[in-house]
Length: 542
Image 1 (cartoon, rainbow, N blue to C red):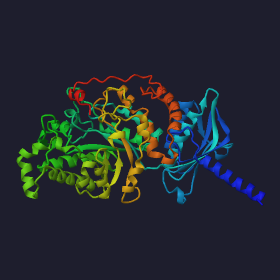
Image 2 (cartoon, rainbow, N blue to C red):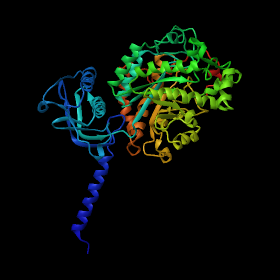
Image 3 (cartoon, rainbow, N blue to C red):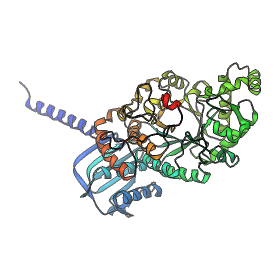
């Protein structure tokens, strides 16, 4: 005979299990989606003004960021107050075994108000970003009505980056600040700033003023465009602005290739190049080159407190054939028994790496440097060649911490719709929103030598075809939101349909911020045209 009590107990057990599974799978109006969300039926309504009480370890900077955004976005006036009468309360959380990540935060909404828990400034700031998104998602003409909920959240990857190339086209500090604002909103935390390359040198170096006065002239489409660059005061301003948003700024000083602009300014350090890439390399056979570049790095290091500098190291073969006819390079080869330019390239990079290590900075390089023999504890590799998975495997096999930024899907100069004309494709492949969102970094986890060897990922915006702010916006938004969710949200919490629902609300924010975004739902903004004057980019867009 069947025991009725047993069946009732069994049914109740399955019901509880099912409801807990449902709760763990709940999604809310935040990008990137938090790791754990529990929703309840009731809601909290916000109007007018808010009192805020801060924990001892939350900075004035983070509180001010929250207060400014509440005022600018929602016309909410805020003031500091005691905990008992405050609507938003910050509290310090004890670090437990599951809360060791310094970006971890908890956020609760209940009948008392909103409570933010964190153990570090990064955690508090992440909670603020989530809170601002909640307010926007649940905002209506009647006010803001946020459901009761509990969020427990931390990132899947510590490195969540965006790279901007300003050598090819210069955008200026206000556009960079706008980008940093959106990075902070989406919890992206590494801004990789590509400031030197063939077209122009964009950063003031006081010991070598011609780098900007001469090297700052021109852009990708117009070699005679007036000099544009960032003064050291402007760089300090942008670095501080990013720091207030928990974003580290990482400069790139490309070498030994992509050095054309610098060599226009100081030709005595040029290693030559080719017809298509003139003066492409720094000279690896002159001692003066290493002193010159080391002096530059000293100034750069002072300007950027991240203690990380990217030295490029990519595509040197575009110009290193000139070394075959250079007597100083040939003497260098004889001295060390080198037979190839690749060996000379490695020698150059090891010497410049030593200069960087001596400053106490970490070296970042593109994946061509995986076999150069750089110290694995002081070097980070960037895997960008999606068609060369073997190069990623080499980076990991050699023990390097590695950032994923493969062309497919993370080069944002690639078009995002098959109908778009003014951007790159890889054969017929392009980087649409869904492709970015569905990228799965976990397929490479099995190749790691140690846990966390893959630091995270970033998108790269190369600007050959991005010559104005319209093109900039159109190529970045909304793909930057998809990037954020790939880098932050664990695979089992991702849901593309939910992401699109939330994104529709974010498009309203793009509109209010004056951003000329691509709309994947209505395609309301037409693709901005490109003023192309370089024939090879018409004939060979790949």
